[in-house]
Length: 363
Image 1 (cartoon, rainbow, N blue to C red):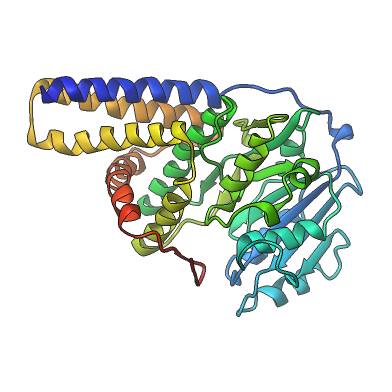
Image 2: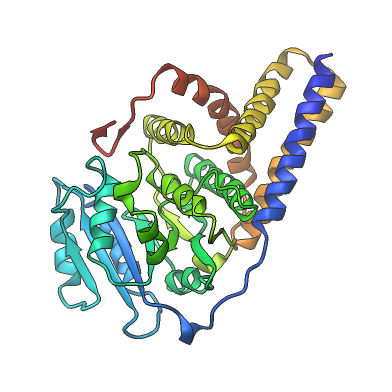
């Protein structure tokens, strides 16, 4: 009986994985480079003195039609040297602006409020966001902006992570895996996830939903935003898998930091819809039975486990290949252990407590 139930669950998991891949690899038409709209890049930075210089340096190299791009760094009440580092770097760069939030626009202080202040001080038709611990390629802004046909209001991009060792490599694979799921569902018109360090949206749609001021507080403000835009029922939200828009972020350096990140995502994910919960339930059951199968050894169970591992590997291999990235088998093995454990533990943790500790703030 265990074998039959496990096979049914993994079969559903495989079908779901295949659907994610089909959705994520959908292609979209682009706008010519010389027709790109004006754009504003907004970066909210809080105590990022170790990362911000690399970030703004990469933003200063962006290729975009002359006079159509501005970059706004919002110092979100940093207590370190973040402000002075940015100030010194941009002093001779006319398209950069550094501000401090001077108005409570969003419901609570934090990233959403910092972004709202940055957007208020911007002029672009398109808003792009990334994080202070990220490095963007020269093609990033132009690539995302090129997807904004008249009926498109949101364009997401993929993020990976710097990785020189297995602990970092498993996090990089986790990002690509989760974003393939995000892209697949969004491209089917079901926004269950996205990532704020690589996304863009039109000012028009942002204004129509009332901006962050009209969005109830969420520890995952990026997801709350796309869900509001999607709810308008008049624009497309898309998530193309395009290596020219690939952002590289800094991996977390400890299990404690990963725990806090995953818990924040888990709490934010509670505001998803039925499709989101169905996806999470399938993942939870698949990985729970993967653990339980260790106590029910049989040749059939080994075959089912292999089937599950192949499903994950095919998704990761194909997505990474399209992004111009490779996979180390040691990183993949670590990812499978890491992913299996946190997918089981996270729902239990979130059920026990929804308190979030992130960037020195508690919610």
